[in-house]
Length: 306
Image 1 (cartoon, rainbow, N blue to C red):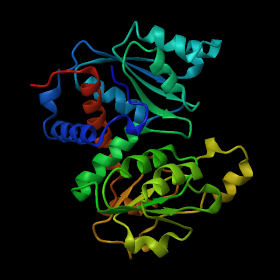
Image 2: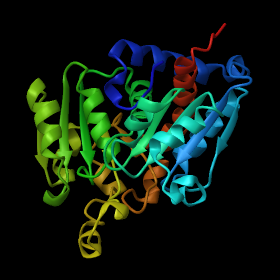
Image 3: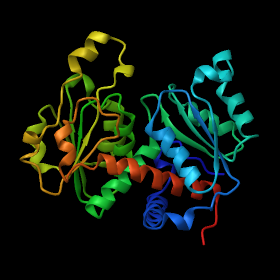
């Protein structure tokens, strides 16, 4: 039984296979309308979520399956003190696969150790978010036609942004990738990611504060919001929350085919007028997230596709 807890749980070859399947689903959804008939997805979301939860649910429903879940951790036995291990043992009796979001880093990994069904990490604290990364990879590949020979700009909250951490780990396995890390000093990429992923592999990167300075270099600009829920100090959040706001004037020096990605939700870090620019790809990401989660569940469940 295979789980997806960390972006590196799948090899590059497995990711390519998954993205090829997601592309096929996007081209012919009706072909996959009944591949999960009788299958049940459990959504265990202990943090607020709109896109990932609805994306998982839509993905399973699109394939003819059904969904079990609860509205919040407060309405589950976790509020009574039930352990992650016990929860997943119980859920394994009800469902065929589980998508889990948890505020504590490592909770999905612990669940996978006790689970009788495949577990998908839908985000754990500020740690990892592998299905968002698969969505990002699909969007980049569909926009650029490749996942190699790219300069990737990551902008905003690079300290707490689990989507950023997962994307760095995944893209570091492709050839000729270069990172431009754009953030205030307080929200830099954690040292352990720089040391264990980029420095160890000799992947070129630079850390800068000024977005406009590096805009002409970028093939991809990955914007992120400053996450209020990750801050212990409200004053620090208020001071940093408007560090980067992408506007049309700032895009003037960008490449015509650069793609702007964002894991959403957006607060104010991308101006609304950017939505109409052909380089804006963040709503495509949302749609691609459904296709890639359909593909992921097909593979983890071992479903046969004709």
